[in-house]
Length: 273
Image 1: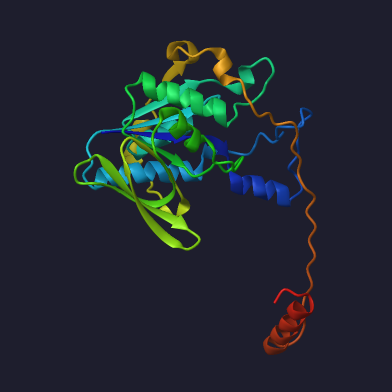
Image 2: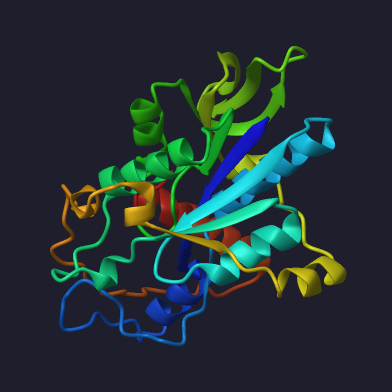
């Protein structure tokens, strides 16, 4: 079995929030990118849980290869992290939007097209795992587009998955507003993983040291046989901005019981309860 895990490098969302709360988050002159260079970059949290889901399948007895792929300027650090966790293959598809003359970023369609081209060029995949969405744009459209272009089923927002005994289908427990939903999908398939999967594992010190020497395979668009037009976005980011944060804090004096009564009365007055 070949499991492909698609990962994305993003700005640390906790650091971004800290900068925003402190009023230090600013947009560059292009109107679309942040100017802060001190914010660390890491693997998107949902994607890390997708890798954890693949590793749990291996722990449960699934044999085969776990291949991790990423598109970006230089995702070597997150790919080495994937190798430290147990990925068998790590690949960087070199399609950096910053290298484009118009500096237009890759949208969901272009990202999915490049990932599908790489999957096909490497012999396909029995199972493609992705995070439910990325913490930087929160769109969550790439997995569905991958499934559409590959012509395979897509199962979203999984908190658990297991291979059927014959290895020709995957049983997925989905998170829904009405509770868990269990579905069975034939392989190959695309499954998106949600945070309900649980905390991903940490690599051991020995694996981290070993992974420092790992070099991701770099694949160019020419090697994929994909024209540069495949990276042309259909959706363009025109502008983003940091909303003004207004804090309104009111302290309620008195003993705890009195303060609690005053809080309830205030919430009723404001229509909150």
